[in-house]
Length: 481
Picture (cartoon, helix red, strand yellow):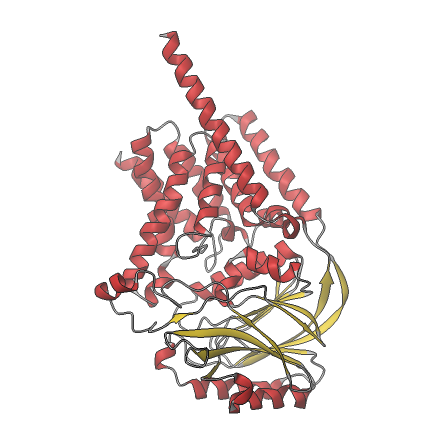
């Protein structure tokens, strides 16, 4: 039993080494293969133990970024998320059922608890590998399925079942090839974009940060804006005010910046809840100014970071540890992130939302020709979260067929092509302005049109059919005795 548990734990560790910041994507397939070999043919109780070992091996390191907000929250998250993944591993008995069950577990992780914690995911392990091409067809869930199916093929090869291994591998190759040639929209024009990174120390907390200093860093960095720029993107929450931003000195500075450079400007703004009528919350926005310096509109972040922007079970967690880093919860916004501007129709997802494919789909389905990601990973002292976030942005680019421009106060700021390639990337902590000419694109991918629904239904059908078949075989076996 100890050997099985060690193998299951090793499978989880291999899975966690595959996503960014490590990015060793073949290890995810190896991890899936080790998992298949460990759990195959085991009784339910043994599978449950092995599933827990795999979940801990994958998510204890994978969620390490969360401990920088609250250690009790990190422990709760690891337990919850490991349990969700573990249920999928236990339910998926057999080489057909296991991929379907894990897909359903990953779909659940993306929506519950706390609005979902889809980071890290099995699909994110493939941003540097060929299987990611399937995201254009079926998003993260299809990529996840391919990783596990590829693991089944590798396990069959390990057992020297060559025909079975070849047949399963052929399915993986065929779906990946279809994704590579699937429609991804088309270019309708170009856009000169500058993404501003003010720089500064990393591993800092908002409650211990001088907001004026952060704002001034970005004002000074904006001296490097290209005169030919059409659009300037500032990061998330680098503008902190206590009333409508247009009425504040910071707002007037941003208005003048847009007008002086004759650009559309999108910047991340945090407004104290008192100004919005609720002193117990704060409001996280992306605000757009036109080239005349007038406010075009605002988008309020829909999806909040658990234990980062709000504290689940606050009354319990604050008894177990320090939650002073998150003294107030963020308010939940509504509607798609979308601006019609002189620079073009802009889709927007704010920071944490980049991990949620439905937020990007909403922005692009509303007419977004590019996808902007104002974000802030300055709270994290390691490169884990900035790298994971950049990996998620690459997935969103492939899924939507759009260029993605990301701006962060201390990095990573980046430009990403519709094929998921990073063509410009900042250094962590540096003050930089990245310049790029990108395509404005229209048209949809299959995933943009369909979303996750068909793949969730399909996985549920496969799992139900597999369970029904196993039950039928068990009943037939009893009758024959």
